[in-house]
Each structure stands twice: as C-alpha cells, then as structure tokens.
Image (cartoon, rainbow, N blue to C red):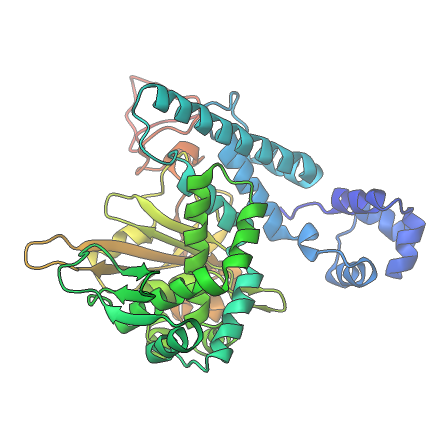
Length: 467
C-alpha cells in the first residue's frame, strides 16, 4: 500500500503558517485539491511535488516513498529489540510512519540514545570489573549508523576526491600518479615494507622521515587505495572532522573509527571518481567484471563504490552492500536506500549470499521478496585473500549487492530473469527473530513477541508454529 502523503503536506504547510488557499496559489491548483491531498483523497503527484520544490525549495526526500520505507525498517528494528516490551506489528509501524513521521523519527532517535547510554553503562561496569579493554561493542554499529543516515554518500568527500583526481592528472588505476603526487605536493616518499617487517600491515607512515611504506602483498588496485587513504588524512582532514563533529558519536574510540571509515570512503572516491565511474556503470549496465577491468580494482571495491552513487541530479542505482563470512558474521553493510539489516535477528539463510560459498568466484543472481511484499534483485560472489605461505588460513567472504526490483532492468544481471513473476522470487526475511513469515521451514528462532501454537497431536515442517 502506498504511503499516505496528506499528513506530510499538512505538516509542511502548518510549519510555514500557510493556509490551504495560499499553498494552492503557489502550486497553481485549487484549494479544494490541496484539501483532498491532505485528506488522502487524492495522491500527491509528481508534477505537484515538483511545483512544491520550485516554490519553497523543499527537499523532495520529505515526501519520498523510500524514506518512508527506511523509517518503517528502522522502527521494526526498534520494536524488535527484546527490551522493547509489547510487540508492534508491521502494519502499526507503517501507520505511525505515514501519519506521524516526526513522532516515528523521535522514537528511532530515542532508541538510539537509549542504546548509547546502555553502552556507556556497560563500559563503566566493565572498568569496575577490570575487564574493559577497548571501545564499547557498539562502536562499529555507531559508525554504520552514520553511513546509513547519510545514505552511504558524503558529497563533500566525493567532490574533494574528484578535485584531487583532476588536479593530480590521474587516470584509472594510476598508482604511479599517486606516488608522484605525494612526492611533489607533500614531500612523502613511498616504498615497500621490508619483507617480514609488519607482516600484518598494509601501510605504515613515518612522519619523521616522511616515508609511506606499503606491503608488497598488495595488488596494484590495493596499493592505489592505500595511497589515497593516506591522502585522505592530509587533504580531506577538515571535511572528515566536520562530519565526525556533527555525528554526535559515542566516544573517542568511535570517532577514530569513523575517521578511518571516512578516509576509506575518500580513497574509494579518489580512485573511482564519481561522475566518471557512474557514467561507466550506466554504460556497462553495472557489470562488475567489466568495471573491474576498466578501473583495475577488485570485485569488493567496485561493489562497495556502486553502493555510494547517490549524488543529487546524478544518481546511480541505489544499492545495498553487504559482506559476510561462512559463519554468517556481517563485517560490512552499507545501504543507499531502504533495505535494512537487522541488529537483533541475524540474517536470512535463504539469501543467496550464503549460497555463493558453494561456487567460489561465480556471480549468482537471486530474485527475492521480503515479508512486506517488496521485491529485490541480489547479486552475490565470493572473494578471498591469502597473505601467508603454505598452511596459513585464507580469508573468504561473500559480497552481496542488491537493489529494489524497479531498478533491476538497468542491471545486466537481470537478463533472463522473470522480473514480473512473484513466483520466481525467493521469500527471504530480515532475520528469524524479527521475520513475520509464519511457515518458513528454515526458521532458526520464533519471532520476538510471537505466540507459539503448541499442539502435541500435530507435527509441522516449519520448526515453530506461530500465531
């Protein structure tokens, strides 16, 4: 069901002390038309929204369906918290989001503050017990929330990275150009780490000798990324500091982690400059292998950069990006749109990202459907890293890249798939503990707050029979 926009338009009008008649004159429609929109008797059409943007400079995201879905997903995560009390249904979360979005955002923010205070109290308890040994366990979540809140796009960093790319006269995969730029502009010499010196290091900077040492195990694309990441600490330091200062993060350790994440963002934006990369992605229909060859970087780097293409007036497909290991641990997750990764329920075993481990290096496509009926196209492939000798462990991950079905035709991976056939979609969920599917045979836990039907006279294929 499409979200009702009447309450949002009424709130917009009342905040500016406008009468329905005054708003109608500015939009070139009748006062009765405005009244019908506010009463949800007529939709807020695209032409009317465009006039609203032109007349008042309103951010169209205030009336975005995707923003409504993102807020619903955030509410579901809040209400899925085991400490939230009485369970709240998906329908109730949607009703709150569409009729009172400001209240819904307040609930999400209040829960976020609660989590921060809980983390602080846990940290204090840890110190008392003499077991506190670093950042609170929610530090990574805080940084992920920062990226999620910004739709995984930071315009000031992307713009600065493009400027650097042009100023340095770089080309795709131009590691030598970055080395020259560091030497000429910042008097930094680049060399390889001596073999056996810091075997776990990718890069190390010595400010005394102004030497940046890189691991000899890095590929050309990885070397370029590490050089650009160091440049971020010099040329984008002010922009990064402003973002971190505005984020109201938990503590110093979390702020350090955020700076590292934002430096990596700048690095990706430098070696894959926005407009050039976005144009290539559109021309190649988001074929990751072709983009890898053109820009000379790895599968994960391309997939991650694709999830950041949200510049106004030049957007790419809004992707969700995730990286998991064989045990299901999610070590990276970014979202440019409304797909939400739950904190309390794990992830769905029917998701094709886990099947990717069965065919290492092969790209797998999946049409999937969430419990709310929204359809998605997911692309998954494994990546591996082996930095040691014989007998040393190999890092193996699966990379997932997904988008809403309405964007799927823009991707080469949709070719041959029946996008309009609901039966072709695999039913997945946000995680068993917050998934409402009542008869899933793969369910590992009952949904939080669900009533179980215990019947000794019947045995079902689904592990938990829920009301």
